[in-house]
Image (cartoon, rainbow, N blue to C red; front, side):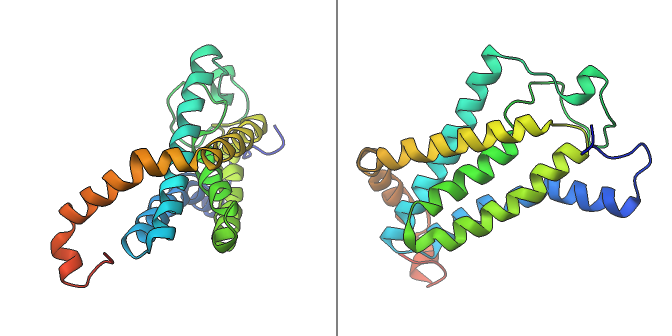
Length: 189
């Protein structure tokens, strides 16, 4: 594979790739939690939609993997592997599905488009790193993009149902759990 690391990559490249492959995904929960805790109703609904999109994408990935086990590069002795990973299906990439699912969801709302674009851009080094380190094929990333887009579209189309079923109970639970933080002015009501 041309995108896979050579047999003896530099320590700097391995460090950068491992950071991108394993740590950049943390931007997703940080963004969603921040958006909820310090957001108005509109922002919270968008954070709920983005969370639902990421969750739906990951669920879709599990269904796809159940019906079609696509081996990872190391499972077929292809390339070099520099990241420990379970020998499960590689298609589509869960990491990229989550990142791009949330970013697609955000981009569907004009007010949140810039944050969505920034998150989508952050997904590019994740995709590269997971291929470079030998746990994914480029095809897995294309599949993740497709699942992310489809999930965002489905959630966007189901906004009213999502608000009716999930938002109000979640807001009530949030007010109950975070009451001391809300009263102290640490987070928004």
